Length: 308
Ligand code: LMR
Image 1 (cartoon, rainbow, N blue to C red):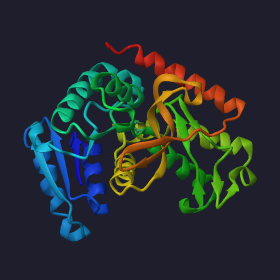
Image 2: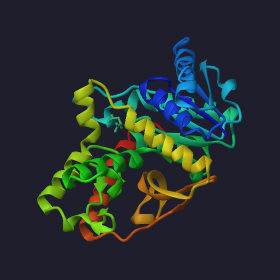
Image 3: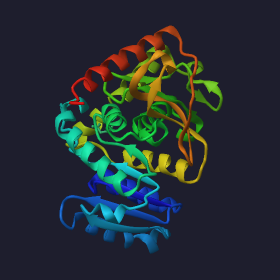
Image 4: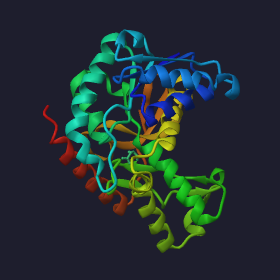
């Protein structure tokens, strides 16, 4: 199993690290345009192998896509991160050009690859890859929902005073400060609805904290987060590599599901060796449907800015 991660910044390096530590991939190629940077990150990570007990071989390369040839999975983290006070959507001008070039270079050398998009604005970048590469929709996956759901579980566990392993929940919709749809109604603590433990007011707070999860970290760190994004990607990569048939909310091209068409947005999918093997349609209530519709309108507005 060969995995390429494009962009050796904090997010890309975290992805490579978590993938390696989980020890399911034979090879991770880290590629960056900055001379020597990916090579340095790869060497540093390889020097943790004996300490962390993994056999995955990580190599770094400066902008030479021949080194990525025949990758089973490629992760695109390239582009610029937002600064405090910015929205993800403001990154579209710079990141769209980068993601378009990177995805076509990857596919040239790995025509059978599955692509995971991390760069922001993530749903629109996923749509861009869909529009410009001709890859089947099963092989184009936007990472956002997996990350947003991890943040949702963190906030739920905090509100419940419970360990995170007790908590289950999911965020669908767009990966934006307003577009996320945290499904508080369906979230559980060991099969018991969290609404049995938490007031509506507290659950609304959890929802709001989840939606601004990335912005909160960007304010604290001065740039966007990397540990949870890296871990979320590694979960998706592992589900595909190990054919786990796991369900994650991911940005996927919808063709009628959830009443939406011609848009990539977060919905639950089953991930296995073929990428997205199924889109799962869950019954939403009227408020959730309205929120999903509003979220899609926001994503479409950003998609309209693409020069397609
Ligand atoms: C995140 O949610 O951490 C990423 O999308 C980066 C960001 O800008 O918040």
